[in-house]
Image (cartoon, rainbow over all chains, first blue to last red; front, side, top):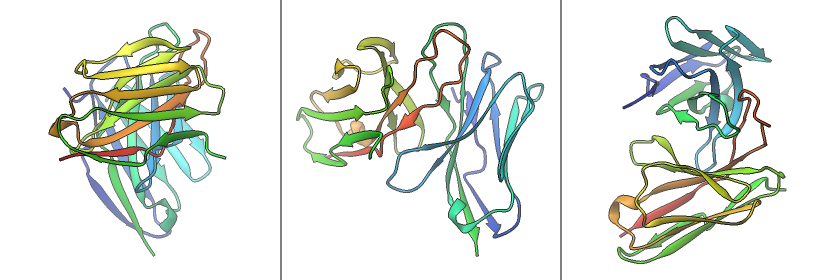
Length: 115
Length: 117
């Protein structure tokens, strides 16, 4: 049962343009969402997150938008740079009390930024 | 100065063997995790330990046994390896959240690629 879905396995964008990566989720208990970036032969690296009480979070060139009613979030990268080429994972968790939160990951989207 | 380290990076072994993967974090975190990324690229949590105590144990065969000698280490021992165990295994850690709503960021190690022949 895929609770976090990234339906685009790959995305190719020209340098300087906007990259938009999409993620959908099915579990309405999720209240915290994260994007991770992964280069080959490395572990995922945290990029940006958003709590369900917000609909937008911005950090430099990266902005995450959350649409709770549609159970959809997206990551915008503007402007895209060749160094952004990596696999991007969407992840979600539910607080539900306690201090340890399980992250549920999507399958990832391979972003290629062409010079 | 590596934050979360795993050894070995690559592990090739025969079916039926027993192997261990080690993980160490120097971030002072209380919680550590093991994830498996299979051939379909899904990253799925296997275990989580908080202060050496098992917190999360997903549906994982009991051939997999995590061991946490102290809160900076979480090792993964696998008995009687099977072909389907071939995957990349990631260790991760996160800081304590003191019972507050989650703002946990998990920090991942570089992964161990296990190949079972």
